Image 1 (cartoon, rainbow, N blue to C red):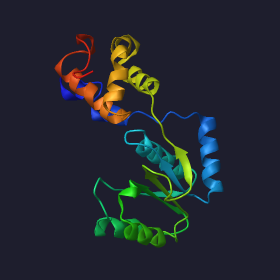
Image 2 (cartoon, helix red, strand yellow):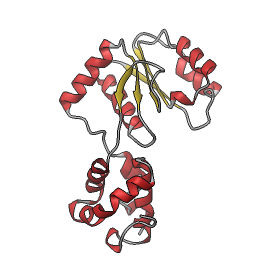
Image 3 (cartoon, helix red, strand yellow):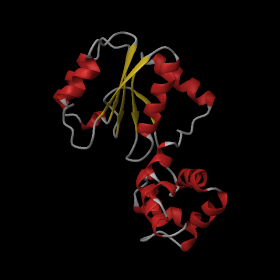
Image 4 (tube, rainbow, N blue to C red):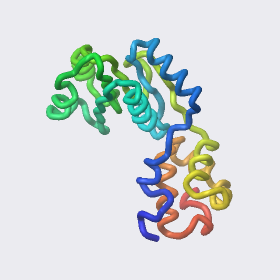
Length: 201
């Protein structure tokens, strides 16, 4: 199977949307407004924090805000100087700074960034733990959510074939849906989903 045809390819997974109804989005945006647009999206690895942050940024854009995204990778104790400069250049009240992975920052770097973004109209971060900012949303995962995502990617028939193995995958990857979907990518690369359970399941 060609990589781009794999239903668990990265571009297919990135096309998934965060599962929130329109009423849910209205409530989320109202809560964010009540928090003066300074809040955190909290949850474990692979729970959808990045996806929610990106979709939140897009929705804020439709409301006349200008989202500015800074993505921090594992081990980034401070932003790269050029990324920080680009993030803060001309920052004003119409901008909302989005920081994905804010808890990677050291305490001094976080305090510095928080001070530097005071001119912005908002600051929304993702973090594995609460406490950096008031919690806007707590992301969680479940086997049922994994099953729903698999169904969306491969269709109902093949999802039913995979379903008996999803609980083992979920446990193996400690609830990290991103890692579980990567494991399914590897399975599909070797053979169709009907071939049997994922290795190690």
